Length: 102
Image (cartoon, rainbow, N blue to C red; front, side, top):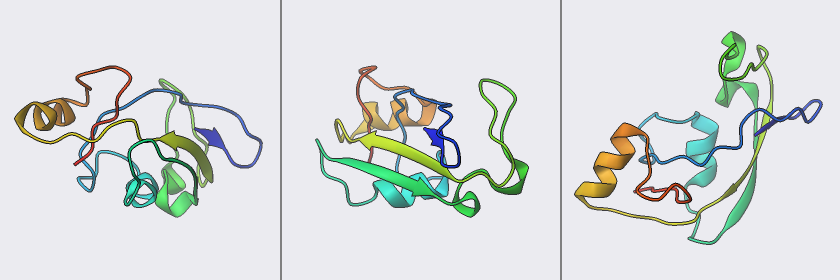
């Protein structure tokens, strides 16, 4: 992700999560909903759907209060079943290059 104001990058990690459970920013949940495997999107997230007035940080990165964000995302895989559920609960992927959604 990056800050929309000046383009400062802050996160490039691959993550695993269950859609709609509050494990990611509301703006990410909403922006990813409806994606297809192999699809890409640019999510432009207003502060109200991001970190809001609290911001985030300082570790592992710092996001100023009321910052608008931009994420370039690619949905690599969708998985279901007990192993995918367990991985999503722990915030890990079965494959480090895969995002698991349900």
